Amino acid sequence: MIDRCQRDIDYIRISVTDRCNLRCVYCMPEEGVQWVPHNAVLSYEEILRLCRVFAGLGLSKIKLTGGEPLVRRGMDRLIADIKAIPGIRCVTLTTNGVLLAQQLPGLVSAGLDGVNISLDTLNREQFRAITRRDELDRVLAGLNAALECPGLNVKINCLPMGRNDDQLVPLVELARERPLSVRFIEVMPIGLGKELTYRSEDEVRAMLEARFGPMEPFHGRLGNGPCHYFSLPGFAGKVGFISALSHQFCSECNRVRLTSEGFLKTCLQYELGVDLKALMQDGRDDAFLAEAVRQAIYNKPLQHHFADTSGQEALEHHGMSQIGG
Ligand code: SAM
Ligand code: SF4
Image (cartoon, rainbow, N blue to C red; front, side, top):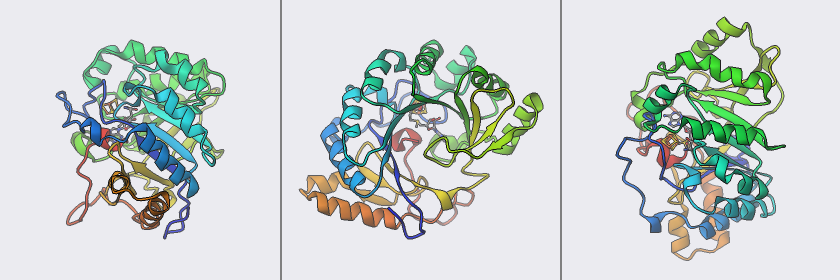
């Protein structure tokens, strides 16, 4: 659907849980966060009902996220049921990869179209320091299993944060032989991300070009979102950048988010939107839900102001694991 700024909003990120089996330093403290009580998390039936409402409004691409989506049981069933909704064209998953290898056959049979694996380093000690867990081997097993699935679109998401500078080249090397997109995401000042060193796209590009030579902008379409891609000579895959801070892309933003508690969030930076779980608990029918979603999306903020947060109202106070990234 078209919002008041003439943006076509066709993509929704749905967080299925706030729980996670890692504790990335930029996302979650070692002790975890105050978990949402189980009865406050959307049930699968509620998620499916909302997906039908979203599809009716033209939201055709769905990304399942978390917390870690694969710690919630029955993701294969959920994916199959979402894929069966008329109007849904694409269902993908963002995961830390720890549980991916074991669940992949079921997810792919359910119709999963693509998987984004978050991976900031290939160095075991660094991985343990960043995620506070010794799980690199299982993540790499998940990545390799995903790359062996014909037709599955596989991407790596890396947050460049200074301490992994030496890993950016090795991560890009993964795309030399394989049709894999390696994407660098600028750390956003949300939750623990506020305390992290921030590497800009230009800094990362300079590091990569010093090793690989000039990168060629790639103008084809590779995903659903604001990532822009580059080709490297002789590489099967692409390098991408999602640069919300240095290359603000709000005028092209096509996405909204649904938290695991059922709040439809229309901009990452603000707590603006509508509590759809509360409306369902109040017994509202689908037409009422659709109108509430339509109004919230229509009024999606024009842009974020991460660079200047002074004196603004309704700023987001939840961390990334609660929002879904
Ligand atoms: N657990 C899954 C994962 O790690 O892919 C899904 C949820 S996680 C919150 C989604 C994405 O958000 C991950 O790629 C993670 O790197 C990213 N993320 C977390 N905190 C961030 C921050 N402050 N700025 C930018 N991205 C962040
Ligand atoms: Fe978990 Fe993903 Fe947050 Fe890391 S980024 S703590 S894997 S939710």
